[in-house]
Image 1 (cartoon, helix red, strand yellow):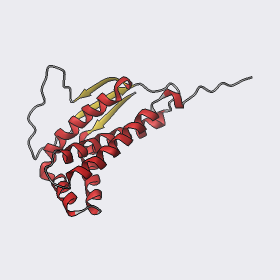
Image 2 (cartoon, rainbow, N blue to C red; image 1 turned 30 degrees about the horizontal axis):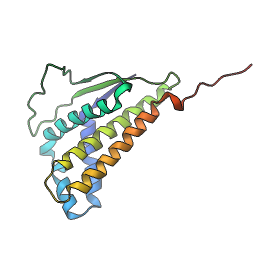
Image 3 (tube, rainbow, N blue to C red; image 1 turned 60 degrees about the horizontal axis):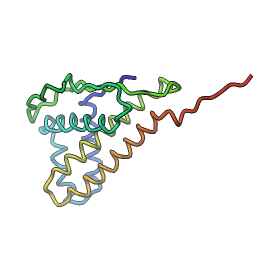
Image 4 (cartoon, rainbow, N blue to C red; image 1 turned 135 degrees about the vertical axis):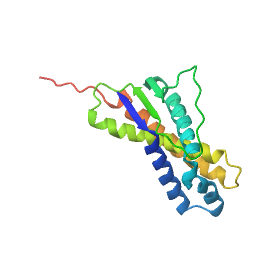
Length: 168
C-alpha cells in the first residue's frame, strides 16, 4: 500500500504538539519550544520534517518497498529552503501490508506515520538546542516517536493477523 504524507499537515501537527507541550513545561523547556511556534521558521521546520521522514523510513526498514521524498534520488541534493517558506513536500512510502489488512486501516496507519515523523522532527529540533531545558524535552519527544514507530511496526506485522480457517 502506498501512503502519501503532507509535510504541511505534519508541520501543523508539529506546531500543535509543541504548543501542547509548552502549556505544561518549565520556563527553560518552554524557551526550547518557542522557536518552533514561530511561523517564520516554517522553512527550517519543513527541512527537519523531510529529514525526520527519511529517518522514519530507514527505521521501518524491511516494511518499506519503495519511498520518495519530493522526487529526490541518490544523486540529487536538497535545494535551499528559505526560512520563511514551507512548500508542501511530496512524501510517500509503499509499505508491505498483511494480506488480511483491511482498507479502512490504511488512513490510521498513515496518521501513525505522520505522528512518528512529527515527534522525530521535534526531538531533533530540541536536541540541536543549546538551551538547558532541551535535553528532557528532546528525550520526551524521542520516546513518543519510538512509541509511534512501534505502533506502526506492530500494525503492519502479519503475526498479529493470523489466518482464520473456516471449517466446514
